Image (cartoon, rainbow, N blue to C red; front, side, top):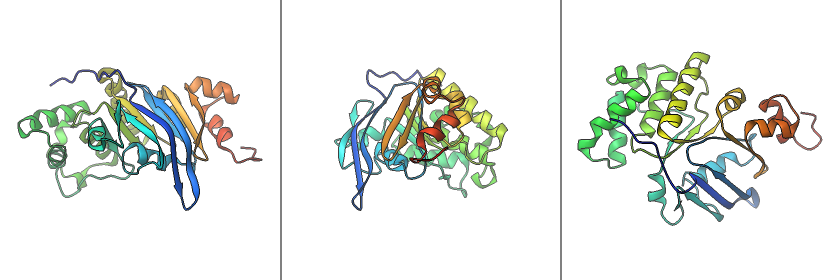
Length: 255
């Protein structure tokens, strides 16, 4: 089964003037940005910058106090269920059931998204083949390596054919070979199927190599956004990592 490239007249994400306040402290402060359909977009920030809160709002886990989020043109506050159909999410911690097989985990996801039963075998076959894990179909999740679990989690997130996928630290804890294999699959997903990939990562060498657009958040606001080369030039450094450290340094820091 083939999957046609995702197409949409709308941006994958349009975040407009987002505000979120906790205990009198504004952790997201009039945040606005756009993610174009079909790009790899990296959302970077130090701990406490408002990154996690923003992602929770984008994925409908947390409502903004103010502002609006459009996912593929769908207002996530007015129609959250419809917005969720347009994206998949892979969290930093593994959420596969270790006592179930790969096939059983994927079947359960199909049921959750109410994918018609006759369509489920073909969809499962497709995502397993897409990530090169067809031979692991009947393996217990508990027997798999971290790299294989990650690939299967991403495959699972694609079962309902979302145009957008959120990846929170997708290669965290993986060895270099597993990281490279996973990125090969992600690039294939983006280039062949037009899937928008929104990711967070502390591996800035990976971001520099693969992301088309980077946004850096500090104190609840985006301090810069654009192509990797533009950010490096603007910060007058030699790498994205050096630029990130400079852009997010506390006032007075020499980082």
